[in-house]
Amino acid sequence: MMFRFMNFVSTLFFVIAIMSSCDTSHSRARLNADMQKTMVADTIVYSVTIKNPDAGDEWTEKCLSKLDRERLVNEVFESVYEYRAKAYNYNSDEVMSARDLKKLEKSDEFSRDRVGRLQFKESWFFDATSQSFTKKIHAVLVAYEALTDEGDLRGYKAAFYIKIK
Image (cartoon, rainbow, N blue to C red; front, side):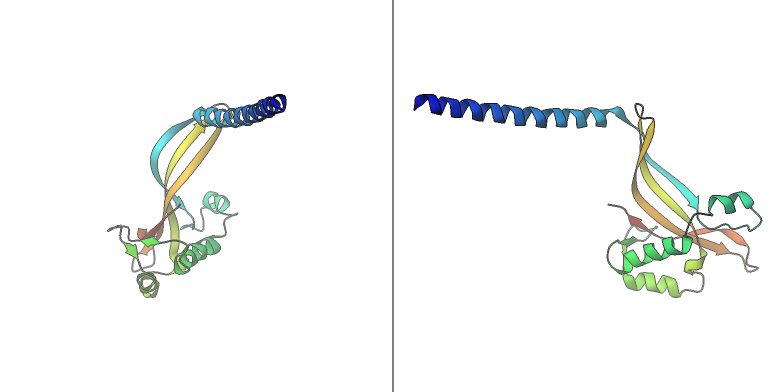
């Protein structure tokens, strides 16, 4: 009887030891992989043109040829209207209500068709072993074209930003 109990305890100890070592090696491997990544930009902010302001600019046209800008802009707006994302006022950092967003859309100076830039706030990581970059997006700002009375592009105006989880 004592032999069976000792055999059971030994087997149990062996199983636990195996499971623990697997867990530890997996955790250690993941920790080592994470340690290979070096943060190269804690926070970086940059703009991306998503609408070519100059139809004669063939390079920008080519760069944007695979972008479905209308779908992208509509997805951002719908994510706010459907409460999957929150819109924030660029100047005050206050949450914008759906009513605030609709008010913006009804203004004479704004239309979804004039959304021409996104501004990203990100952290960047570089993995020297795999020679790869990883980015963590913190926020995306939506900006629209500000035009002169003649309809020429004067610059871009911030509409709102959303935080990325």
